[in-house]
Length: 237
Image (cartoon, rainbow, N blue to C red; front, side, top):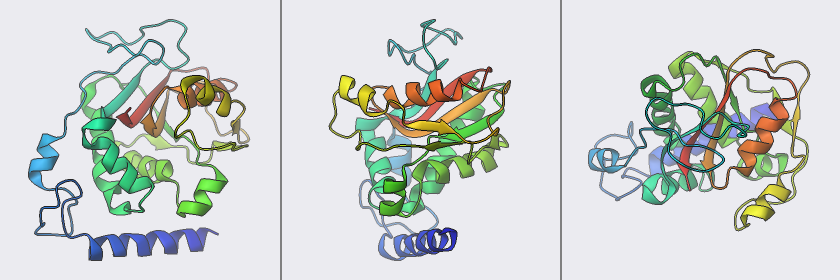
């Protein structure tokens, strides 16, 4: 399974380099295959400067961390807005097998950790687990690929197999808020004793819409973890 996973990922990357010598967003021809976006698009992407509250959705300012006291996640930091170009990048990476975007998205996530100041003292990164159904469809876990790269760039320890999906009902795409909450109930489980009891954990995901997945996953981690837990996503929808 691991060999097939690695081979499929390798050939996806090769295909991306061979077939996409142009900017993913505007289509401008690129001089090198080492980049996936032109300079204008990279500079034109708007980036968030502050985290937001998972419960009320408000931006957290003035150096504050906790907004709503009943939030299971201390705060969520999104690199950018889903509708402002970031969604197209996530969809291409996750749904269209454009794995060459991994490096760019990972650098942006790592930059949020290293430069925002909100993640000081966080020691672990745990990706939201991908279901077996989606893993078989795509051949890879987009959250795990990102988490591995972010861990390398930041030096924050990756816990790749500390949790897993124990059930999968259906995709969250197209569901309303209440349906999303119900759809992810009981989705996650902890594997053995790999979750640190007192460590501060960053949950990494690609997109946050209503926050139901982050809340459910955080609730699962709380069965073991007593430290701080924050969320980090590429795009906020």
